[in-house]
Image 1 (cartoon, rainbow over the protein chains, first blue to last red):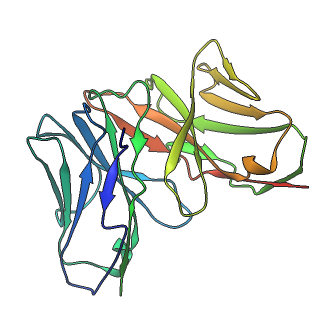
Image 2 (cartoon, rainbow over the protein chains, first blue to last red):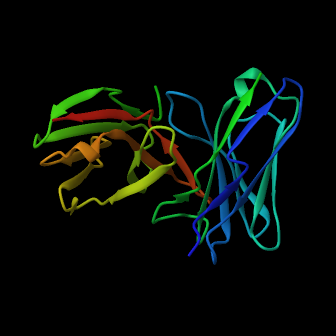
Length: 114
Length: 111
């Protein structure tokens, strides 16, 4: 069975540009969450989506947005990129919203903003 | 105060050693606790959940002390392949699942 898949794996963008990152959850998982991990830190929560609705939002500016599609895949969009947005963006899926059994992460998208 | 705090290490230990990592969390209402392992430039992978009664998985033992808001991970008989960053993770209580990660503890096992 395929795990959580993310695309692209690597991306280089210029300051001010826009980026869209994509995630497909494990088959049967309805919840997708997005995390940002900057070098030397643990991942930080950005969004959680369940059944196409936003269920939670972390402390990120409005430049960050996301959505979930009927097939439970998800997109993370970041506008007006800043150098500080350079990070590993991780997508995680779980069956339900509470994730009592932890999350399975995709291999991430490494974004570099220059 | 950080929500989840860990000693960043690195812990440099020889093969066969026993090593323990500790973690504290700030939200006493937290209900779920995990240890994740992250290899260099890879995604975090769930190592084990942590239960109040303590739990063991092979060479790995996790303990939770709710009164002290303290979580630990013990690795016995360290292998070279255990070299990684170990992330302490707490599930923030609420109507949705928000994992709060510590910054991680680096472990380097040498021959």
